Every structure is written in structure tokens, then in C-alpha cells.
Image (cartoon, rainbow, N blue to C red; front, side, top):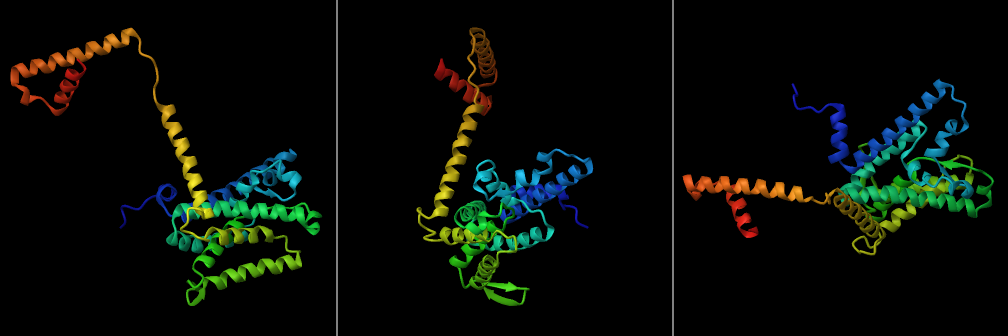
Length: 300
């Protein structure tokens, strides 16, 4: 019988606070996936007719590829990389993230995984938007993109360029080098671009792959793009952390009555300590009493 098992809620809290970054990313994606479908179910059951609400998926969770719409909803660069509509798309991406994320985290660290996921996804999204600006065939279609594929492609490609000969056991029995797996993924997107009828954001995937390649060039150099992003991110966090501490400090002014009351309380405590010394000697004082008396003598 197991008595120390955590409940599901406690386990989720533990993973979000202390678990692998891979697990945290999986949980965030799962939460967003569940939230999207819960919201859509409530909208459908409530028979809401408001167009903005009906288009909540497109307005909040998707990345617009047409520049005129993209500038109005730039948050899609972030929200889209954590969002999925179709169950199969979600499961495929999460399966790849689970395996590749753990390998990446073992080679580098959890913060680099988080930053590669986010920065790779953003870079891939921008790559798709730029492609729609440059290529006439794409300009004809007003599309939106959604999913973590660009982020995952960044992680996979970073692994392939950093450690190309690392073996991944496919189906638990077939050792396949990392670069072979990456090439297969890249080929799928290149072939997809040549057909152009599968409604997949191939430029977003390839943009993520380019970022993955870029992120591991001169990985130990402070000028490495991932190291620079990590430095900027830590500086950003440190700034707000210090600002929060400063805002939490009390700066209220004391009145004359406050000073008089405080002085009287200290004097009463001093008198009690001196009375204790006269009765039982200095050695009978506690460390706190000795420290208080010493500080009072310095301030006196």
C-alpha cells in the first residue's frame, strides 16, 4: 500500500513548480487544448450569435499570416505555439515534444529548452508571415496557423546540428541517428511546399528549423543567439524582481507619537533586562537580550 502518493492536483502543482521543463510545456499545452474545447463547447451550447465570440479561436489562439491582420493581433505569435484544435495534431506534437524535450533538457538545461521552444516558435511564425508577403501564391490565401510544430522543429533541429550522430531508439528497437530523423521532418515540409494543398504551415516549420540550427552555433560563446536571449531574459526577470522588492518596502513616515511610543517600549525592555542582571547576573541573559542591550548601548 502506497501512503505517500500525491493526488493528481498535487502532482500537477509539483510538476509545474519542480518538474522537468518538458513536463511543464506538456502541461501548459494540455491546459490550453482543454480550455479551447471547453470554451467552444460552452459557446455552442449557449447558442451565442456574436461574431467576435464565434471567432474566438481565430481572434485569440491563431497566428494571422496576412500582414494586415497580423499587426492587429500580434499576440498570435505566442498563443498559437501553445494551441491546437485537432486531437491528432495535438497528440503528434506532444509525443515528439516529450522525447525531444527530455533529450534537449539533458544536454543543456530547462531554461534553454523553454527559450528554444518560445523563440523558435516565434521565429517560425514570423518566417511564415514573411513568406506570405513574398510569395504571390501564398498571398491569394488568407490563412491562420496554430500549433507547436515550429517550436518542436526548433528543438529537433538544434539536437540534430548539435549532436547529429546521437541515436534515438525508434519504436524501442531501431537505433536511428538524430540527423536522419531531422532530415525526414525537413523533407516532409519541403515536399509539402511543392504540392501546396495540405493546409500546413511549412514555412513556420522550416523557420523553426533555421532557428534550431542558429541556436547551437558557437553554443559556448556569449554571442550565441540562445545565450544572448537567455541573458536578456534573466536581466528582464531580475529587473522586475528588484522592482517588486522595492515596491514591497514600507516607506511610511513615523510621527512624533510613534517615536515616543517606540522609545518608551525600548526603555521598558532595557529596564527589565537591567533588573534581571541585578537579580541573577549578566550570564542569566538570553542571547537576544544580550544583543538588544548591546545595540541599545551603541545607540545610546
